[in-house]
Length: 115
Image (tube, one colour):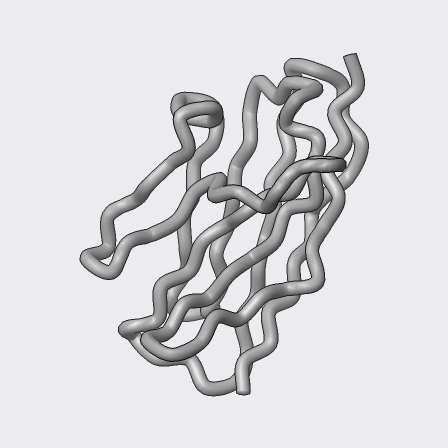
């Protein structure tokens, strides 16, 4: 089993920054792919940023240039550095771990950006 625990969310003013963390525990394999998704009120969950199976990164167009995904393999932790935050970035941010046959999700962390 895999457990994902997010932290770092909160309330920030527009233009501010937050850093989210996702610590993975349990059976973690080198082929696992981790990333961040978000779900705004009344909207579907969408990709924010993720690593690909080749190790490169993929970002939603709406966050490019403002958000950076990184990881510490030794700690099985993935980070999401968010700068120049906008009110439209307000959402619950979910950590995701993908395997061939299964997706794992964290409980989510709320990010609220005030204008």
